Length: 580
Image (cartoon, rainbow, N blue to C red; front, side):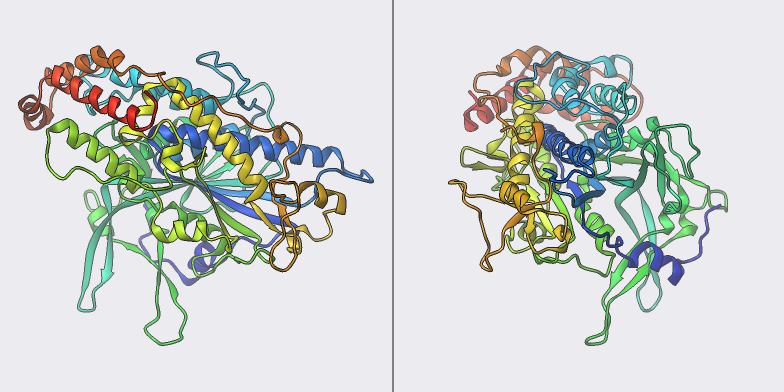
């Protein structure tokens, strides 16, 4: 039975108050991957290039140990944590598995050879998550209708990721041991917490949830895991609090379970995990410090037959539906709940790196009701926008004077954010309809990441991270340069040096496919849309879905009109994006 006692001051200090320890000549960073829908292909391309660039640099650095004139700068950049929501959570899960292995990167010159490409980021997003599979009626035919779209492509992709392997494992010195991953979830059951209202306690139910994981890579260990995290490994060593990869994939599918569109997921975790949550409470005295307070679940509400069960069972959907703030979880993993990461370019030694495929201007939803399809489209747009970062986080990431928060966004031919990617239309669902759209965005993610590492993910040369481990020739070669090749300096005359110097294959300029105009004919999907809607309407399975929803659908539009509407929306999205 879980311990129902409140967190002790010692537990709070160990879990929340302390920041990640300083490490000499080392810059620590956390990745935060926002919601994506089909734009997850862009984020996947960013991660693919980031991994390649870090490998090229650190592999060269290791080969040059003891060399008199090394070409590779000898500071360290350490990935501590990945936090993700929705499609960003799916990419976090792929990275957690793939980082154990030596796998090939994908560039424009890499042909698409279909399913089974030995790069899991590309294989999942470009080859496996397709609208054709999502419109298949196999789930309804088998009596398993739980969502408007078929979730089998997601299940199949999750199985591929959970079982991904390569002939050679790879030890990456730039990956923390262990690597932490946090996936945000929308908990449909909810977790009750009690709070003191002054004249008695009140219970509120929190549906914004998350799960913590620790990954132990070959040759690594974990001496003291958090009591509220699962541990996964890759070899036969015994691990505390272990979780099987298939069970981990269930959490990855849950964070990306777009409400109504894709199936919700049934999850199980130890009830004790919910004891280890805390919040910051401002002091009621002027000038006094804030304090960390543990959140106390309402254990009475969670009891079954008079006792607390060991496991907590709940239904979960897309993390962005209730919790689009994985940034706070990532930031405090580096700084502690009460701390702040240094922001000056001469002092910063840790940062949060955001990846946001939809940065930039967004549109408004409809003013009035126009049938179910328009409602579903509006819901799609709403949830996509809710998985984006809030204004404060965007402002901090965009501020050029702050070096504890960075952001990678789509940029192409003067366009930024959703306007720069092919998969932005129809609430970012349109990418699933075209492999060419997904591939374009994947390659754009690689190119944007390369330029980010060259010119933005930098600190000034006097930062202690670089002290004593950079040579003058290295500074001359890798420092940030302007369009004419001249070194860029700040107001104090300091060079900017990259935290991830581009070497080897990563230094070769990335290019993208041409803008994928005329690569999608929406009418190709007419028959599949009509068949899917007809199967939904005629579904005779158990439960109240048919009585309460399907009859309303029939009254709104027939299957042919739904197809007309969907195709019209696709055509309008293609025209707006200059893809038709």
